Image (cartoon, rainbow, N blue to C red; front, side, top):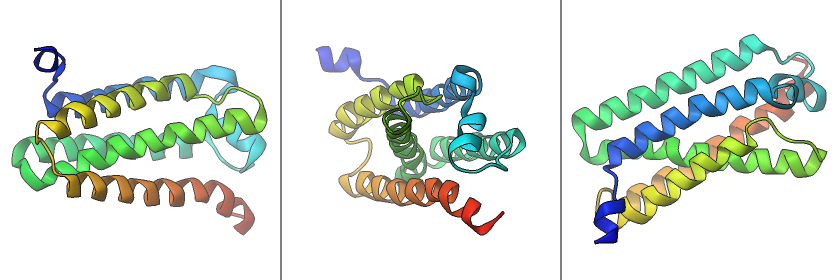
Length: 163
């Protein structure tokens, strides 16, 4: 009985990831001087608000499109919004690392908890109910881990290239 009460339809879980991302952007913009200033200080002196908003605007677009495609087509298309759920979850660990490495609050850390909670519930309840397969979950997780590693690697590589 408790499981049925706590089970939220998969599409709502995906939309919750998008809503949480928007809240996360507010955290990254307003807390502890902002994410942009932190990146400028620690990694990439030429990083700008324009780059930050372009990048995150594209993420919002991609997440939204992936959810809409899944809602329209279902089935195997679940891997795309599932990928974004996992990517946002892994991104939260970046904020933990930043906070520990620089002994300063990483803008986005607190709201990363939203992704961890939603993804935990998504995997716990929706996987168990058969909303996606183990293979789809592993594909989304592995792809998200590689993507996040490469994406965060840009913050280290681009400054070295002088871009």
